[in-house]
Amino acid sequence: MASGSTTVSSTATRRASATQDASPRVPSPLYGLALAVVVGIFAMMLGRLVPIIGGPVFGILLGMAIRNTVGVGPVFKPGLQFASKKVLQWSIIALGFGLSIQQVAKTGMESLWVTLVTIVVAFVSAYLLGKWLGIPSKLKTLIGVGTAICGGSAIAAVTPIIKPEDHETAFAISTIFLFNVVAVLVFPAMGHWLNMSDVGFGMWAGTAINDTSSVVAAGYSYSTAAGDYATIVKLTRATLIIPICLVLAILVAWREKKQGSAGFSLRRIFPWFILWFLVASALRSTGLIPEAMNASLHLLAQFLIVVALTAIGLSSDLRNMTRAGIRPILLGLGVWVAVAGSSLLVQGLMGTW
Image 1 (tube, rainbow, N blue to C red):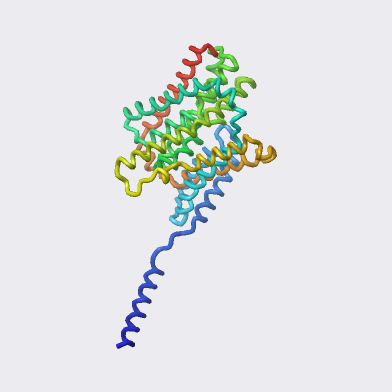
Image 2: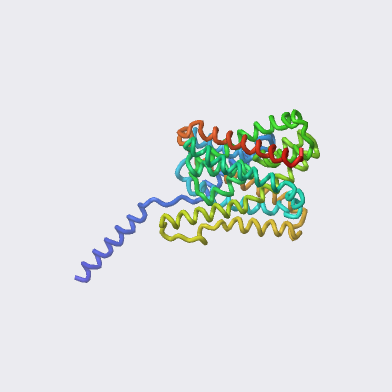
């Protein structure tokens, strides 16, 4: 009897082992991460050649092109998910090393009211127009944040908090990019037509153009003084992504609690990478980071953002994006016009043209 029981037990063990061996194994994240890095390197190179577009936009466009032509196999999925989430968070932390609070404090206070008004206008117009157009909530938030703060970087910062679909992130970044290009071409001509001062145009560009590279391009095409002023205003505006992320995290946490989600925890949903961003910025501001490292840290931050956004592009199904139609672009246009107009209006009332 003991021998028979042993045989049955051994057979069951072998069957269980065989079943385990036959079950699919999760591929290593290194495959997808390596793919995102390789494509990201090409995107960085193209961004250097065509700075008005920039590496992040090239990354997401190249990723989407590969995903929707030759395709991306399941073996790459874990690594792409890792890059689009964790690497994205690391990129935001790395950005903190290049942002000194003291550097932008004076100009930041001068531009604070204009910045706050344009941010409120961006979110209100995104909500109202997005509701009228029937835009999904998360896509509406991404376009609003991208227009209000700093384009692709702001979208990258809030993505880990609200957790949109990859195609929604890709669509938001593509929409923001479209109006960045339009702004670079249109703003300088309009500034001259309105006979704006260097400070006035710098304020307008810094508060109404989304992406930093586009602010720099438009500002310096107007004048050197306007470019300097616009860049500092833009950096100050970028710091407001911190309270925006905290507010979004609290709203997401409150919504989960209201819906009775299992395992609700504010600690779990809190965007800790924003806290580390503050630590990095504090280190930069106190001078503990050698000046010689600034260029390398800035390049690292840029590359991490490109890799993360490339991974999002490689995960984005263009068919899901086309179902949304032209409505998200109309939302982006409406919010952009509202922000640009409100910036001019506030400056006109303050007499800072």
